[in-house]
Image 1 (cartoon, helix red, strand yellow):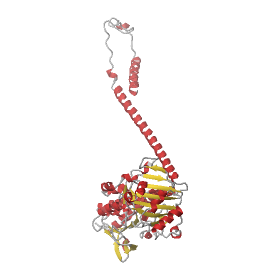
Image 2 (tube, rainbow, N blue to C red):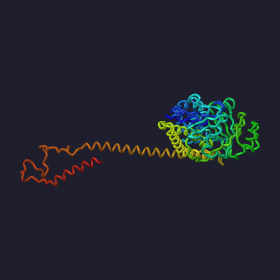
Image 3 (cartoon, rainbow, N blue to C red):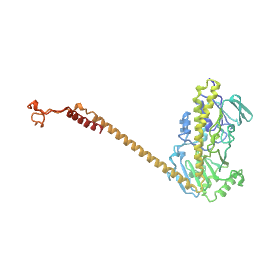
Image 4 (cartoon, rainbow, N blue to C red):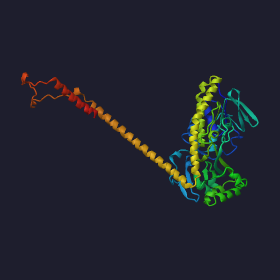
Length: 488
């Protein structure tokens, strides 16, 4: 049996989940990652994994229990402030309307922990570190060579691009590049906040803390190790960070200047989430692919995760869509193993599997990109925090109405079923009565004979004649009466 040579580009969540699922299903693969090792960087903050996507992928990969052991359901809580210090919602204290149900049952896990779980689940030497891809080159026999900085790997049957926003795999399928979303953020960290910065730790709470103003916000999120990741996002021009006059290399004055010039009248507690942060700062313009982006299918090459549909983080769905991509693609490849009887059959099988995956993935990615765009508008609106809380309240009202309607429907169906069951029981009881079981008691000696009823003393010639038609009618009346009882 032929076996495909599979390359996965990128050791992010989508790429690692795909590799784990393939290997778990008996299909070898190799991951090529540009970072020098698994400890090269912090991997960012924390992720909320959804029941209907990322969690399903981990279940299929046999890693769900390990995920649960490392996740933080208490990290889901949300707190929302106005820029002037008023708390509108605090799930830490059960204050306010709370988030919609659709945003619940999404436990948080630190990115570094998730990556560790996935890396440790792979077969040894599955990941080749320090392999920075330059391009993917198609060669003869529908195979592909991978050009890295300083080296080449040849002869791959499948190349799965899981290499993020600026994917080097994507150009083989499309000329499309991500465009600027209109939002840029400053990314900082508060280390061991509860002990070293208790005021900031208290403000943040156990999960996410949002301070939302007009078209800007300070967003903070507690990690499992006590660190808080903080972001100061705002709507601005794409190159604002280069043209605003702030020297980002001089970090302490840069944080002060940003807060004074762009958040000047905000509550000091909100501004201190940036000012009191560690020295290192990163400026992050947010990019996205067009909503509904797709490409002309090319056998042997496909994209998953941000390479296929990068979106901003404001709906919290990006990693979930990517991990579901990995699940759907791996399932389709594994399901066709029996078709790999020859080299031509292998190629046809690979082409069919990747095309089927893409047709499933594109509309799913589009729906999530639309949701993300909607949430970007909620985070950065001309009103502020009140608009976000109002939005949550409207969704919750719709959810409550849907619950009431579902409950009413359920009660009606239960009542109808109970009535039908009771009618059946009664019908069964009545149906036990049979016409041939109806008996007429013999007249007792002391009973007075009914007029016109023949007796032994009545001469035969004087006995009233019962005509056949009358007898038939009498029987029909008895039968009709019984049927009426049964039908009732």
